[in-house]
Length: 271
Ligand code: ADP
Ligand code: MG
Image 1 (tube, rainbow, N blue to C red):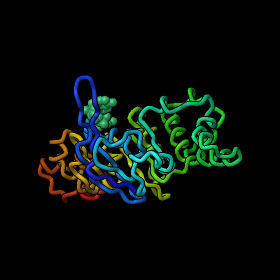
Image 2: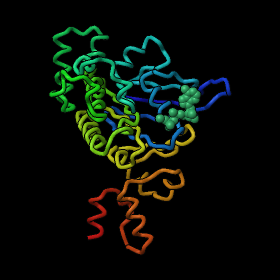
Image 3: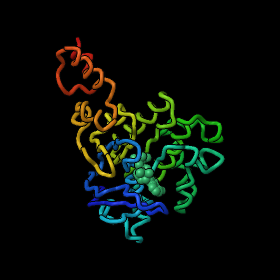
Image 4: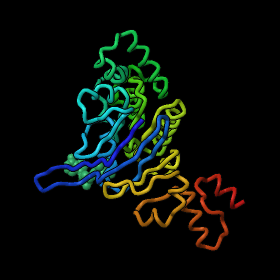
């Protein structure tokens, strides 16, 4: 579904060039759920913007379903395939009524009104926001706004959704709702790229990329990545709460099996 080959991105500025992606190579299959973690400035958002050609490579290549993002004639098909959800829902909402907001992308594609209405209703239903169809988005909570933004992407029926820290501005309840929704979309067969600095969220993915200095320095399952607590700490990153607690208990002399990742596994081991 996605293939990057030695992808580089350099921002040119008055105060010099900034290398944000320093040669990344990977491929992501259709239907995969990949989390991307890394400290601030490691290049996560720059990479995200290459998935739907918001940015183009300075060097190297990225292909979406075989389509080279650098070729202008591919732009529409790439944007039809890849939806994006960003951190700040306020900056994504464009209309004064929820249903118009969800319909916005479809109207731009020139889809007929009956079809738009049907897709908007289904999308609002999918994010549990049908009751808010006629609301002003400004009256909604951050989590509800983010669900409206996600409904807008669902309505477009893209095969890939890229989330760039969608829960960063939400409370724990809003965060849980978004993560549950992301898991449902993955279960329905969508390819999910999920950037987060919440390690419990990243642990829900099938695969985790760790970025540092514009490179992908680790690529593995959550269990492979997060049970290496020392390495994660060296990188300045947290690990999920259960893995952290297991590491501390081991230091106190508890004999626990290696590779504990979830609260259930830790509870079982302690029992
Ligand atoms: P992350 O999302 O992991 O925090 P970014 O992709 O936003 O990282 O940024 C990677 C690097 O590129 C950082 O050093 C950042 O300061 C720089 N950068 C990001 N956007 C721009 C820009 N528009 N112009 C210049 N430098 C940028
Ligand atoms: Mg970012």
